[in-house]
Image (tube, rainbow, N blue to C red):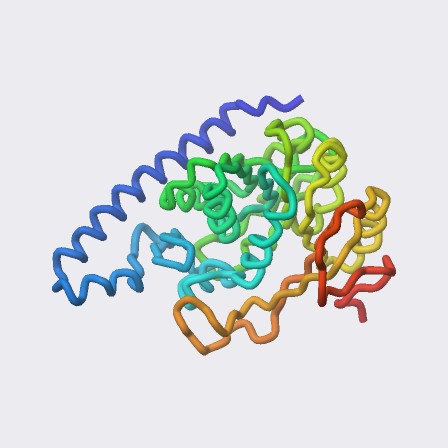
Length: 321
């Protein structure tokens, strides 16, 4: 058994809270300083300012509120610096899903909170809750900062991985001070040189919040194992599912398992670049790059999927050669 309140886990949470407190004070002081140096006509421009804080971070007034970002993360932090948003086409779609079912939203693989903040704000309007999981300690601290900066008291965040059983898993520690894709880090049961150990829990053991409306999973190839640890949640709540599926070699098993749980599946493939982005930046640094996800709809639920491509063959995948 894993002690979820071990010194490592407690230290990670305490560190995140200290960083949040520091950044909240820093943001208040810097914002006041900028306002005081501006004329009344200029003060509105702060909404488009970015504030340099401790390396490697910047504070950005983005579409969904103030966001602490690491610009070295090419697909998320850099996107918010350039566009004031990240994966916004996906966020908009996710927000439409929360109306399909009552209850809370659970996000596994929350990263720095690009979807968490938007979803939590929408849920707060209806007095609904959210739980977010992010096992990378460095990024978990970033997630907590963004939740605090936006006053999202309806969200609980945990620094854990989620899988089919309670165990210790590992990931290769990236260099967060250099450009990379930090959301592309995978968990493994095997340890290796320079790997970091983190607790892995079953969702069925830790999600005790009644009904779950939406289960969003983006865990870099660990999707099936995560779902296998959430059978009770799927059975009890029959939530809508939004599951990444960009590993062709793992796709068939994932699709067939979800079919066995009586879900219909549809491809959802939003591009990263949004032409109508918040900063109105027309330069597309992502080309045609898209995320490959599946919408899972309980077969007994009447839900409009007009225009979406239903998955009818477990061996078909848009990325297959």
